Image 1 (spheres, rainbow, N blue to C red):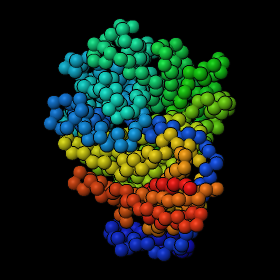
Image 2 (image 1 turned 180 degrees about the horizontal axis):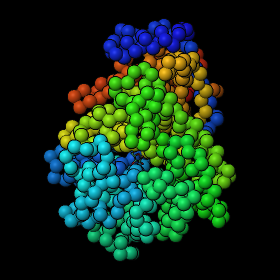
Image 3 (image 1 turned 45 degrees about the horizontal axis):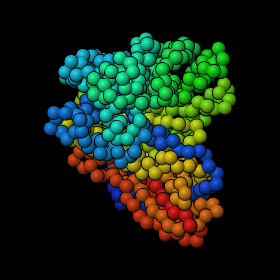
Length: 554
Ligand code: AHR
């Protein structure tokens, strides 16, 4: 391993970033196999819930209108009004679940506005209408929602892509009765209630069978500004006597933002103040965490400091990864506090919003509020976050990346007839093999990365990842965060011989690389076969890469 001062590293790498010079970034003698991955297949962690690979769609900016819904009469290729390219690509990542209609929007949404003949649906002011970023942008569906995309259209998107719907109900501005009636409208068997008949009249005789219901969103903020104790009482009231219509209902409560442990502790204590039975109504405890370049970014309206989406430097590269890496500690800390009350850990975590959040300025259309370009750096955020969820497969039952298209950590960008898959899409496609497999323990060791943060020496892990097993196949996914150094890595599976394998790497010598409408294939995974040697094999994990290693065991 080479030793350098942090200052030397940064000057060289900063120049490489600025120049995009491949030669400057060429591998510089990372020593042979200075890293190891040891998979321990007989140490299971738990089944990786496919729902961990979930998505999120909000009526926000260009997510629904432009991103998903183009309308049945559009010249853009569509399936019942839904953008066909999006459906085709989404199917490839096997989206187990999609959350809708928000986000903050959910607590202002009346589901009745989005049913019935489209021409007669009301136009409503969108929750995000007063966003500073939309000042000067001509009005459109992003601020005055035509409600063309409602319950039936969302159910159609789920059916087309094989996802389960996850509805987020309005707790702030509608009574509990409206929530029960939405459940009735969606789930009552055909021919039973008046709402079931209304549903049939609107085109869907069979119930949607919606299992996942969020009860409010960010209730500490846009969802009502409640205290944790107030919200717990509301949650108990909303979920007490909801008709199940024979199916299980899984309620997800609005959990904390990032590390707000007190929100978790007070909610669990208050929920169970009248007896532990109330835990029975809680399936998932939400957790939201966004990664921002807080080291030296610009302040947004919530006081968060955000860095640029594309024009970041090496410090911004590592800083964002560090922010994303906090997820691991948040999961462990909240889980521990939940266990103070929920001793058997019946309630699991639902990380129903996560991803990178950058400064505005790189959206593909002005109406796309919080639209941003996703680079290779965001792909690494996706990889290391999904690995974190896999490693906590016993705790995390669902996760939803924010958001599917045209917003924050998107898999897709779309505007009018243009469509492109971002590097995040490729990570989801690479990682899809973990869905439903058994997460197994995996020991990874590699030299730490050293860099400079705010003028001080800082460091970061050298490799991190996760592994899963299904029969005699092992899948390892691993991120190399080093901006310039590939990592020669020995891979072994304890107690098993490796018969063969394949490496898929998403990497670039340009840390800011991203896919655009004009250059849609700038970043794509590259696959190479791997030959076993002895009881293991050696792989070269490129600098700045997300990798999937497929192993067949003897
Ligand atoms: O994803 C964008 C917004 O971020 C969501 O509406 C809200 O829940 C969160 O603050």
